[in-house]
Length: 440
Image (tube, rainbow, N blue to C red):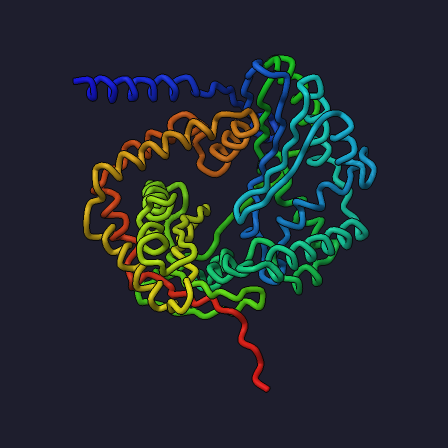
């Protein structure tokens, strides 16, 4: 009886915690198509101003890869009213921080300021959208910055080529086949006209969402948004028609070499549905079940018990049109990559054929409850979630109800989704090896 009461109390506490985390927001559109989301939280004197553009690495033509990532840097160069190189100085001297990031599907810019500098944050983002200075000098400068980043993060970083290897081997036609950061030859070939046209096409109000979250007065904020963003002209609608991939129906094998590693990696890669699909949520749960933490199935088996792997992981890599799913391991000693592949497949096969235990299922639910609460624990995180849910999932309210999707997933559904997507005839076996030394 005492145990039952304790469980009931824990459940009630969990429900109260989730309820207390509910995010209130208001959203509307300006006449130019800019979608606006406001979240008021006056508990601390800070405000996040962010803009997400629906443009990422996949938005390019052949021979012009990497433009979205280039723009992540280029749009800090300066504007009609911000001198070249002064952007970060303006932010830091006014007590703020800022950053940007790009994926295959979107680009996100944000500033965090003391709330009395909200107007400055709005002005900066409106300047970025309306008055960017795009000239040959800036393009040349930022292309070199991107190329250096590519050398550091991909070309000269251990296992830095693993993600590009996944894209290359899981996709044949879709732009996901090419890395988000692009190829150096494409960056070198980019002309100023190419870059100006890209800006005109994608960095327009009707291809963006503005989120203001934090210590704000709603009506005053609306007026400032209207003043700064209302005059920006609407752009042409962005049309996307990317090629569909043919399903993978037979096992494929790929070998890649990395001069920056001494320990090889073995991987099983799968093409899975885009992140809006319900099955993508289930695959999130499967990856957590397999490899999140020392008690997870793959880690306990291959690292702790059998001493075959230094590291093992399962990752659902979310993308809008198709996602990528990777299970990989690094061997211990003389363990072969074939052995790692066999052991990983054995554990995946169990998920395909048997229900996970009720105990493991409850552990999964607890982990996703905690993850959900933590994602809404800061104003900065809330701003990101609001932008992402509107722009990429077409449902802003997911910020409060996404946990309900995970709660509704059953053990039977976990088994069925694994059976649907994680079969041997649908995977690519990847041998990721140290680069062979030339023979004398």
